[in-house]
Length: 231
Image (tube, rainbow, N blue to C red; front, top):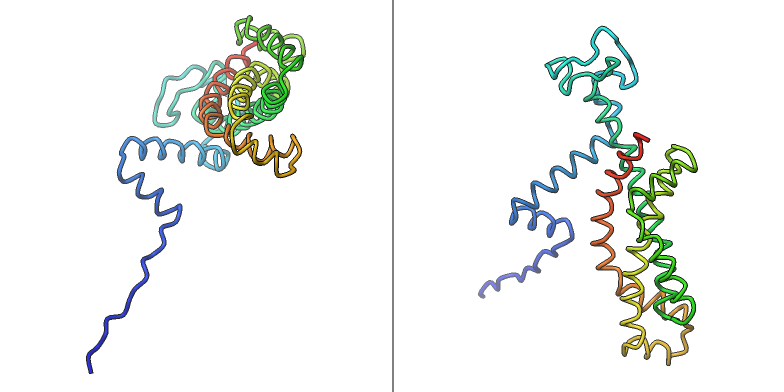
């Protein structure tokens, strides 16, 4: 009687295994992922990690250079700059994520309406977007914050307003291209309403280029918020 070898089923490769494979294969991606993880760790655990109270002032230590006690030095009222940078990470990420999410939602809705139905909504939207983009975007955001007040909420609204044209134009173009595609026509002939065809079949195909735009806008929103905080 001969022994028959047992058949082993291959181990399923999940998302985490694929992530490990990508990080091992590309050192640049590994470095970028490590920096991203460090930023997220600072945002989550920042207040518990800093050696000093970021709001505590000490006039005797004002404008000290970087040292072992103060890694980034101190500011003009003696506050530890390193502690302030780490603690501010959470606020900066919250501002950027909230502003980009708001502009993403508003821009997606406006772009879908203009790209799918066209007509006068498309004309009006394009003229409004042209008006917004005619101004230097940071100057426009600065004017909005100056008019409404320098608060975190107003910085988020101003950053979202100047980012809406990017998403609206991108979604409009993607929807306009795909509204006559075969899969959209098939969904329409199956009895689906225009809203369902747009939301379930056409709009998901516009998400890949929008995710690229989101990744670009997140960093820019942080720089914009930092600039507006000095007004």
